[in-house]
Image (cartoon, rainbow, N blue to C red):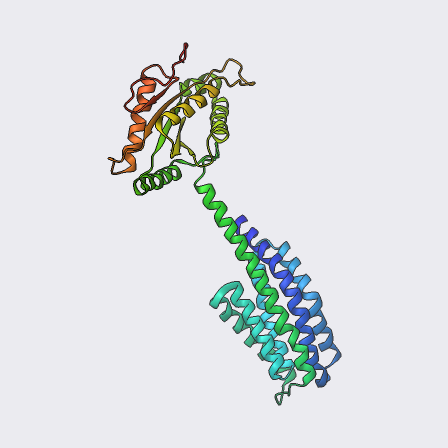
Length: 357
């Protein structure tokens, strides 16, 4: 219900502008066609109410309704009915009739497609029938030059306004789509790429290395004893640690590097065009900086990282093998004392602290 209500209010606000402009221009067009027919005073009053007051009444009706979307649809059908009514009242004057019906048809198609065009046409036919019973037109009025000029603003300005509204809506929808796509590829806690998005990028990088005969490295990063941190200091403290690591990754990696949250307390980094030794030095510096962080909420909290690194291997046929190399190096870092960087096939820590966690 809330989703429908939000959609309805957005629709009502969007149509308020187009309805106000369209009916004001339509009033000029219909008024010029009605003037030679010398209608009764009540017809002029109804015409003014429809052209000037109705857009505001329709907007307030939709805005205050329990289901604004449905109320706005009723407003549009009322627009169509009144449009048909004025067609009969004008004695089917060719140009004002064509301008009124075509502009309303364009509006209905833009709002609800062919289905709403059909429903709107039925409402117009009903309005024509009521108008026929009231005015009983005996002949088709001729369009005068004055009436032609009175119709030109409706024929030129209203399509321009409707096109601008549709353009803005399409732009907004496109921006929302891009935002949703970014959210679907981003880890909500850390702001880094999520598991699936990072693996997609790993496949892209693997293909690039094969195609261009370039190198690179992949790092898997694990926060040592993270479960103990959660159990001892609570999950809020654990989340702070995760966000701090993501912040350090963003601040210390190159623009070309791609960091992600692989899952839980495990992070991952793609380091394009970086030799293994340089990648190890970069990860070791990152490990050092993370280990020296202070946490105001829990001064006793100490953290460290185990990191596994693997260089691109041209012999591999799939990116999964590259990732497996890094995973084996990470396992070795964790089983040989933690708080260190291990390169695949190296078997020796890049640098080991005196007091490993």
